[in-house]
Length: 185
Image 1 (spheres, one colour):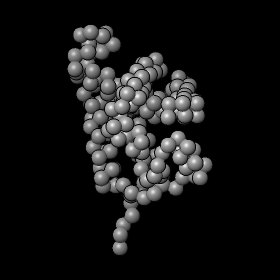
Image 2 (cartoon, one colour):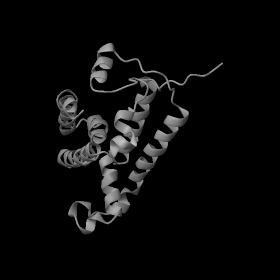
Image 3 (spheres, helix red, strand yellow):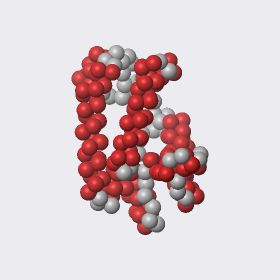
Image 4 (cartoon, helix red, strand yellow):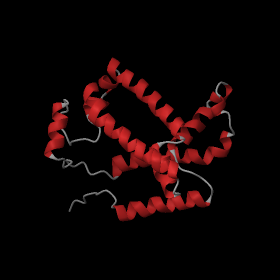
């Protein structure tokens, strides 16, 4: 009998996230990927040129475990815990994606039209990466943190600025997918 893997249900994964957040708050730590990127830039010597990266990165070594955990967790989830089944998408979604030029819709979370190497290394792909990277970096710095930091740490500690940031992230995502994305693709 073949065992079919399923994603963890909310009542398992949600409390796991809550336990991690409780432990981080208890030990005076915060969660967010942008702080890891800042630490990596400081390790690489960016503090010699930019004051923002000039800080005691050794005090943030614990935070680099998050990066390693994300890498290894993603590897384990993809290769050992994934169930490669067809995703059940609505007809309207399939129709919209087909109109945008996507094929084999629902067969992969990473559509090859966007994630194959010749798409990434095209002029359009490079421009999207550079402009998108700049906007994400600027937005993260301007908002005082990234989506995961505000949505998980900020909301769990009831911070109003994080609620405003998360609402802004959702509005920005809606604008991107409904107005800007159809122009780009």
